Length: 163
Length: 128
Image (cartoon, rainbow over all chains, first blue to last red; front, side, top):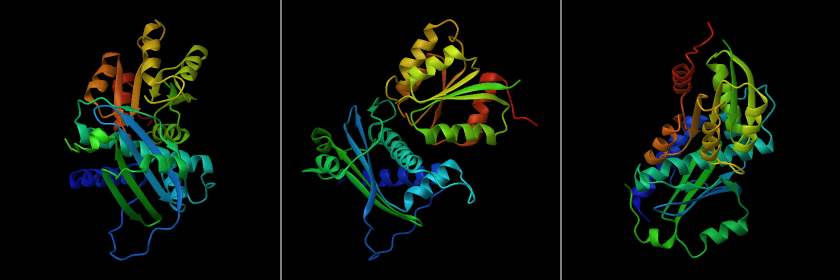
């Protein structure tokens, strides 16, 4: 793994959470509780000077908080629907991926980014099988946790760079 | 003057956030229309008077770039104020969009950015 890429992923993820959903990353607690079972996984494939997939996984309790904050719902509003929760989750993955790519390849590089989509375990396994992530990140939030992993196509993975 | 606005994005949450931002800014909104892709947006433009369009780039069925090309090829919409709201980070692609007469707002965005762009494009400011 590339520590510059890990750092870029962390910075982009924190900015995206703070700006789009007013969610703030908590300090890591060494030896803390392991993450709960994953509730949702979103993948954002991209192609360009570098190709790969960004995978975002998150705890169940994060999704209503994320959607509620993005939509600006008040406490007495109806809770976000399941569709809204998944939509907000995919949008978070989209924002993180879109903001990470220029840091990887420079602002002149042109990428084709696919629409983010929710993936089942089988599809996620196909992305991650036999590949180590080029960057990965675990973040704790006051309403749960999220894991991010960036998988690059093999040729790019052999030449990891951050612009 | 009130603005009839069309918001084009395949994400219902993003459409809601953009519309909510316009309302928070107290911009004088008339009718607000939504479309989930470029094709739906063109249909909405055909059927309604629209003063300002907000659009994403990466959408299914018809993406934002193709939608913009079709809009600019139609004399009725050739000069229609258009704002692309996207995570796009490529200066190359942003310049290409701007050459087609689109303004660009990068996600995530602050409401003040939207206010300034709307004011520049339409001359319309907050309702007081």
